[in-house]
Amino acid sequence: MMRFVSVAILCAMGSTPVFACERPSAPSSIPDGATASKEDMLAAKKAVDAFKSGMEESLACDQSTAKKDAAGAELVKVADRFNAQVKAFKSKS
Image 1 (cartoon, rainbow, N blue to C red):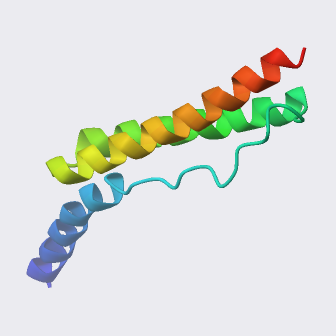
Image 2: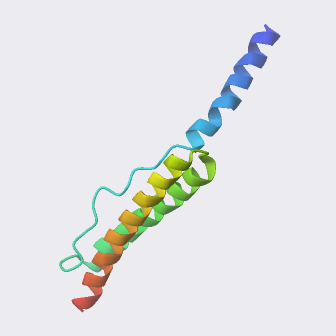
């Protein structure tokens, strides 16, 4: 019985890093800065910041260079989309 418990604990401990390396989903949408309200833009900023934090955790954990490159490219793509909408939001004021 004790051996079974030890094996179960080792299996659980071994599987934990897999969940920590899970790649987050990009924000589903970023509002159009030309028509969005300030509240919409702030909500989008929170979503992008949460995505960025989750992606940084995933990048720190993952050992695959190809996965790191793809994740980094996705992060840049989301940031560029958001920054373009922030620029449009600021220019309408």
